[in-house]
Image 1 (cartoon, rainbow, N blue to C red):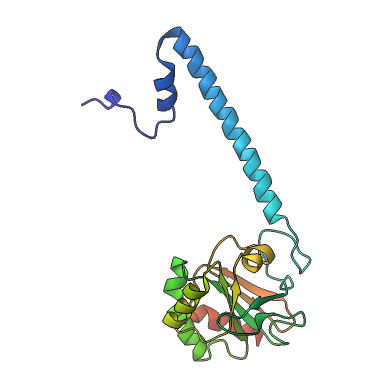
Image 2: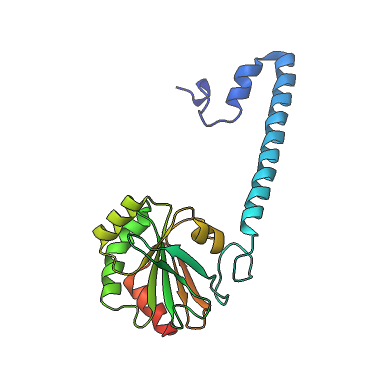
Length: 211
């Protein structure tokens, strides 16, 4: 059967052609319709650019602006409610973790890569893979029940702060998704930012630089 007998479903001209019909009048209407669609697409791209630029150009508490916290920048200070208990989890202004290095692990129960990375990572942290550095978890946009179940299932023993509305994950660090791992030296300077799942080997290598 000839491939010309039926248009491909993905063909962008198919809906316009079905509405316009054929002949000179249809051709004129087709041109107008396609032009209108192009104009609409340009307008939507413009709006998206404005929204995206507005979100990612905001300045965090470290005084830097941009898409992400970057290597060499001062870590934004933050304080989150501790998951399943009293107190807070966060990074103070005087360094990575009360004057010592810190490993910040951004994750959530709904995050596929987090589900794959966390059991091995949690076990390695429990065994001391981060050395003297403090390991702090930031759980993003989870219900308390889901977060607690994930922590129990994966064997997390390090402190976890609850970032209900991504105020820290996205608002202060500018991360668009999960997981991320950030390494901070005792002076509060970011030494590495790792997007995606983190292996125990990576944590050991980067944590050795912030002792």
